[in-house]
Each structure stands twice: as C-alpha cells, then as structure tokens.
Image (cartoon, rainbow, N blue to C red; front, top):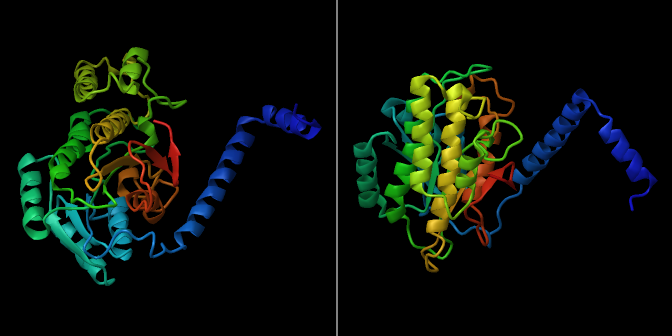
Length: 331
C-alpha cells in the first residue's frame, strides 16, 4: 500500500488544473531536453563507432532544416554524407556551406516524387559508391500553419511524404551494403500520425485495428487508407470521416509512414547476419523551420539529434520502432 506521502501526492496530482498539468509536462520536457543536450556532448567510444569515412549516408531533403542538420551531424561524426534535394541550386549551396566547415559531403539532385529521378540517383550511387549504409528519409511537405487545416494540397502531401518515402526505400534496399553492423533506414515521421494517440487519432476503429495488427497490415491496406482519405477530400466528406483533426493531410501521410516502417521492418527481419537492415522512424518534435513557419519550440539542430542517434545505434540496433527525444514511443 502507498504511504501517506504517496496518497498526498496522488491527491495533489488529481486536484491539479489544466494549467498546472501543462506546466508540469513542460517542466518534464525541458528537463528531458537538457538531459539530451548533455548526452550529445558525450563522444562515441572507439568500440561504439561501427562507421568510418567510407560509410555512406544519404539524407533526402537535406538542403535546409532538419535534413540539413542531420547531414551535418552525420558528417561531423566522420561519415561521408550525400545531400539529396530537389532544387540543385539550393542543394549545391548547402553542400558548399557544410564543406566550408570541413565536412565530407557531396550533393546530387533528387526528386523523391519522380521515379526517373530516383532511378537516376540510384544508378549514380551504384557507380560512385557501390551502395549505401544509411538512408534517412527526410524529404517532406506540409502546407498548414498554426490552426489552419486545409486539405487543398492533400495529394501532393501524400505523394511526397508517403509515396516518396516508399519509393526511396524500395529503390535503395537493394543498394544497402552488407556489413556486420547492418544497414540502417530512418524515416522522419511525426507523433501526429500515431494510431493510438490520445488526440488526433483515427476515429474508424476497424481501420485503426487493420493498421495496428501485424497480421492484417500490408501495402494494400496502407494504400487503401490513403485512397479512401483522398476520395473523401474530393467529395468533401473527409471532415466527418473520422480522420485526425489536426493537420489532417500531414497526419494521415505520417500515419502511413509509420505503418510502412513497421511493415518493412518485419519484411526484412529475417535477413541473414551481415545483410541485416534496421528500419525505424522518429518524431523530431515541433521544430522552428520553414515547414512550421518558424513557430516551433526547438531548433532544427535539436530536432535532428534523435534521428542521428537512431541511425548510429552502436550495439544491437532495434528495428520496427518509433522514437522521440532518444526514447522509444508507441505507434
């Protein structure tokens, strides 16, 4: 049985108002961010460093924001990083900026929505490097800011955030280099796409169960979910369709990314030693970038940290998991 002090604490917690609970959550979060900042200052040991300058990492959408900071951090850890971005001028500018810091980075144009562009990129990788060790799927779009919730660009959001990510994974998996440490794929996602979040989750219980249960999860189920959403967007019934209520199109796209992460992790889980591929996703948080109209509460550098941490897992990497702030969270 809990002692008197525990009872008092429970009563006190139960009597807290919304403001007090919000303040307590914010305090816990700030303490966690301070802990992560401390952890970032601790260098990897030689025993932990499975990578070298010959380890090749591709980061999509890395000309700015979170992708740029992920690329910068991986290069700072000593990897060779390929910046990939749709705009060649902006990509080249980002490359030069990082090279001026003494980092080993190269740039190649890539549009994840264009199959021909992805195929050309893959061919270039094969010729230049023979394959890759790490793929970070960061390229993504969002057209809503603040309290906006337009679905005007829903098709473009799905094409980039989900189908672009899927296209890259399908194309790059055959190019993942064999190694004792295993290759890694990290998908940038969002808590907004969680199946069972307290807020913003799917209202359709049957659909939620189909996406949650491993036995029923498939590419067909994921694509059918997206198609159903887009159909309702076209006929105007999406508002009452049980879809997430905040940043709806973006949330649905990331829900699909999360499901696809789990699916591909399972499909690739039985690869033999030396050919393992570890596939995970992470939520960077609400970040001060162009995508949020600079309204976030953490910097792109802070947001990139968990993605880099997942990509560089030194021992017994996990697969098929979702992370935020260097911790595993539920889908």
